[in-house]
Amino acid sequence: MIKRHKDTSDCIRASLDICSQALPEELIQFYLIGCPYAKSDASASSAVQGLNLSDRGWEKRALSKLLRWIQSRFVSDDGYVQLGFFASDAVNETIEMLGLTDSTPCLSHPRGALQINNKVTVSESGKCTVKLRETYATCFFRHIRNSIAHGGFYINDKGHILLFDSSSRPNTSADKKKYSAAIVSNLSFLFDLKQLIEAGADAYEEPESAPEYLKTDSYRVNLQSDVILSSTEDDQ
Image 1 (tube, rainbow, N blue to C red):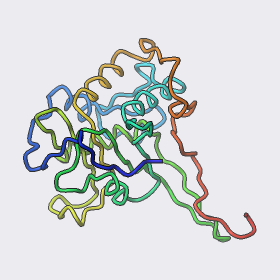
Image 2: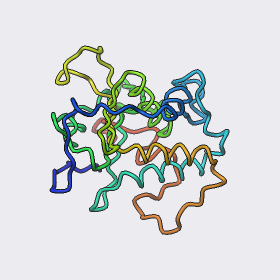
Image 3: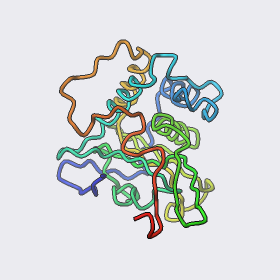
Image 4: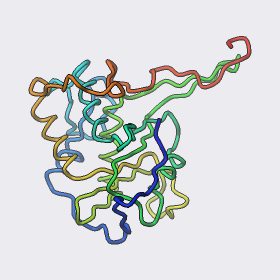
């Protein structure tokens, strides 16, 4: 469960108008041109030259380790994973809760919300289910790729980065946009993640002392592939 972000004295706030630092070329090459994706999502790759993570050994249990490593970089000071994936058509309410729609958001505390591709089915009996159409890994990298491709990123002089992905037209005002993702992190995270992936799964040893909230054997983190959204009285 993602917690509401509350500004504290150690929050570094910045007006997005002055967050105009350039994204390093090697990050553009990796996340935009060679956007990574999970093997099972090959048909839905966001980039023609996309990197199949399985080519570096990141599949099955290894892919779970990669997702846990990513999660570990989004843990709040009080122990909450502040990175959520939502089977919804937008994440506007969540990114507002995280303070990312403010005119001067805090950029120093990693957090994010991402909409994951899904298909909703409603039966004649009224049962509504949603089936995920991509893995969490592909979802994560897809939104980063889209943010870069559409110029939806802001970087301050301390290296903090805010990425937005939106399905709205480019000139749509911020208060009317339909956001599919928003992520706050820093350039060192993007460099570290790039290095980790390129080194390959065999080169990574997961810490044995990983907190319980980061432990999972599934690369679909905290959400089953089929989720019942509502049900009839007979099902209850």
